Length: 273
Image (tube, rainbow, N blue to C red; front, side, top):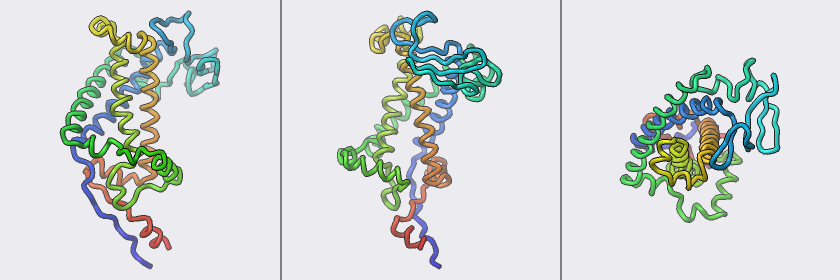
């Protein structure tokens, strides 16, 4: 019986990145949950400059008596007990996923706006650190070779088989990670911030060009919601990948910065035998 090989312990995540990671995680979770409560005040989404009950909504969460439903265009999905009607109440999103848990639009706005500042200031600080330290250029931006279709397809197949990088390859983010992180940091979060500003009448008066960019306040609200749902999907996939890749090792890297490289796959195979 041979002893399982132990990977090298390396310092992989510097403290500014770890600080931003946890601050951003808190801000995004609070904003998602408070945003769902704000959405409960009018669970309809529209395209264009206007939007009110008589106007056709492209998305609606509602109820017909004790039966909840989600409507996207002409598609209607029964969601009783999950969306539209749950816990004996007619409400779009249930108390389990909202802040506050009881209906309170004013409190939800306060939570949302406060943590919006946390998100924005933290993001700007991360951008500044990332570009100055070259963390973004060195660690996050995919290389031309990694963006080749053959390379991406190989990475997709490896993830589908749950074959994660090992040995020295695990020191760095893989192409799919890089693409996902860049999309979140430079696309989704900026869009969430800008569309959020577009929904403010004061900002519309100060920066009317925001309305032109997003095609009106209601279109901005729709894009804001879609980006928020994309962030929620990213978080869910991210957490699943952390669990599959080894949660203790991944958490240690994001708490202390130290990460133990998984042994090369050949060594793992020999040990298993």
